[in-house]
Amino acid sequence: MRKIIVLEHISLDGVIQAPGGPEEDPSESFAHGGWIAPYSDEVIGTALRKQMNSPFDLLIGRKTFDIWAPYWPHHADIWPNVNKATKYIASNTITASEWQPSVFLSGDIAKKVADIKQQQGPDLHVWGSANLLQTLIKHDLVDTFWLMIYPITLGSGKRLFADGTIPAAFKVTESIVGSSGVIVVNYERAGSISTGS
Image (cartoon, rainbow, N blue to C red; front, side, top):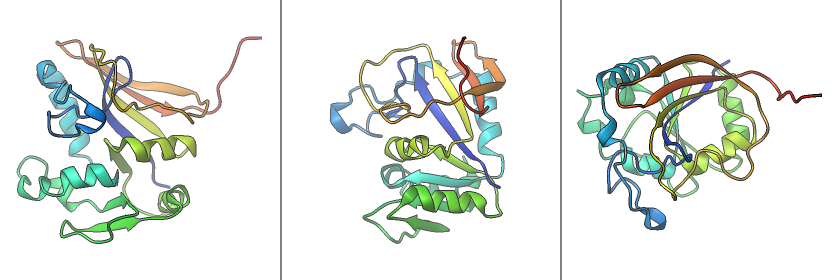
């Protein structure tokens, strides 16, 4: 069975919107695009490249696809695996793209993703895709959260965990602290939550 691994740059207050640049996703008047730039360091870069160079297929939302499709085919030198990966795109509005291989998913996204998880193939990496993430989390489809947690609060923006998050337990299987204070942590699903008696 394939795993769904969510990889996100995330602020202390849970924001995942537009970490890479001002024009990445200014929706809902988000004014802090590019907020990860001051925190770059070699430790975080090495951890990030390890994930980028592992075998994977992509599972992304339409907005993330719209941002990535014009960019990554022309920057294969930076991230060759993203162009080779099968891209599963959740979208009710587009059905084809020149960026291949691509598979477009519409309708009951949760069921379709659950079916894809049962197929043979590499794990499915989810980057960005705030709206799709809410569906995956609500239907308990995420196996691992690989998070880069930045020492910053943004106050507004799309959040990783929103309404509809189900109670779930996770265990830490890896953690690294960079020189700029960014914490990279891998949380793997560990069953149901336990409470005190």
